[in-house]
Image 1 (cartoon, rainbow, N blue to C red):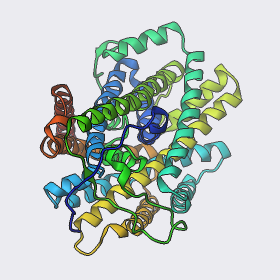
Image 2 (image 1 turned 180 degrees about the vertical axis):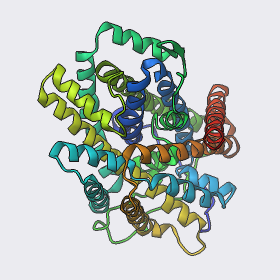
Image 3 (image 1 turned 180 degrees about the horizontal axis):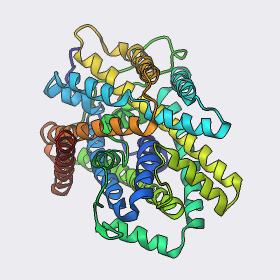
Image 4 (image 1 turned 30 degrees about the vertical axis):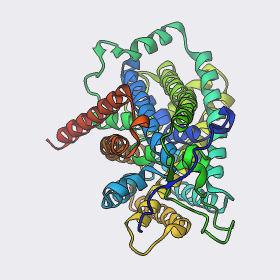
Length: 463
């Protein structure tokens, strides 16, 4: 595809705060089902609250990463992938591979299926996994406006799930549990600081990557705010469902820019303030609260009690303990919330990865055009579903194993895209709207942190 130069258009005035809410729910939902519900509670159940600092740091890093991703889309009305392609076209190939390979492992759907199987006494959970993968494909295929389908589903799942977790944790946790949480937030555990002896580095790195969205999924934030109509995203089209709309001519993935006049710079800064508030409230605050309380819930109920149980059996033990401390209904409802949230995460993951891969396929092709984005999206979606089914059919069915494989791969891709995003914003945006020194510092710290931890983990695994 030949990229059109950025057109000059008027920068719209900021939308009311209430109309901006949505994209952050999606990106938050992408992390709820993997890091928050599985990886961090699993680690806390074995090593206590002293490691929860890593989750808080991960969410904080991702807040700044996501906002720099939003900065580009807000100013240019196109995803960061278009921006990368304007710099180096071959980067599209990297994003296709680095999105497809880490995310074809169906650990999230398999975790949801395992819990559903436990609820209904079904032993062959991999058949449920396959059914869930196909169901996700059908939901995404037959919704009217794709973005709205994902936004509405993730918003309600998040609101209900988070509200229930807050209530349950506050009800069960005692004062000494809260003290352990406060100490853990600064890295103080039981007889250790920051990293306990015996902590699996791959699991911890995966949990760090999934303290939020993880991998290239963070980059999908630029597509979501574009479709929501943030800033210059007002001028782009939206992907429709397969049965809704006959033509894709209104879809425009290349963007536009505004003249850096004094009035426009002031308007951009007004946008920047309000979208920072939206993301800080929905993603950072809600994400930090959720991940901390889910860890605290695991610490309160099953710390030191999971023994040699493998995979995600700790969730069943946690449910059983919740039932003992409250009522059997609450324990069962906990499993239902976990299963539905995991399903919502898988839906969000497939949507985000399909957006990323299809857009980069268009960018790397000499024959495909913008109007082919919808058909490419759905081909990619169902290819991912097929890949997941093949993996399950080959006997790889342990949810935790699949999630950790995906998470470790995604941690390395985060190291790459953090550096690329910072480089893009510092070289493509007008000087007046480039990131501040503090934002640059946070991106550099995230780049070094994910890079050093990824390299150390890989060396440790193969040494």
